[in-house]
Amino acid sequence: MVCARETLKDILDTPASDDFDPVRAALDLNERIFNLCLRDRHGRVVHAQTGIDPFDAVLADPRLGDRFLTVRLPQVRSRLAAQRRKAEAGR
Image 1 (spheres, rainbow, N blue to C red):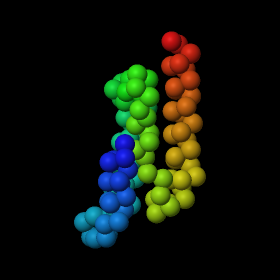
Image 2: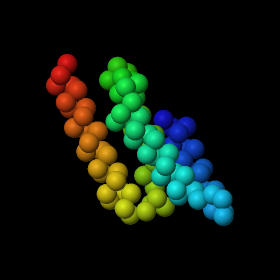
Image 3: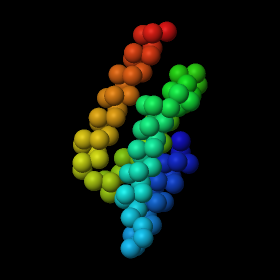
């Protein structure tokens, strides 16, 4: 998780160019992590069986914008928490 988060920081530190938008790249990778946590069976199993949380790889950096920090990130946190509560209740 630390490596993924550090990679996201490195991406954000990369200068933008005509061919590369570091903010868009970091947002896209955060979305992939969200999908791993919410939809991928392996991501859910890793957390349930080991306590290692793939969500810890998400980067919440001000450079990603207010909308990400105040809307999308809390939305995913809430959905993930509800999903985990439901899974725990089913055990």
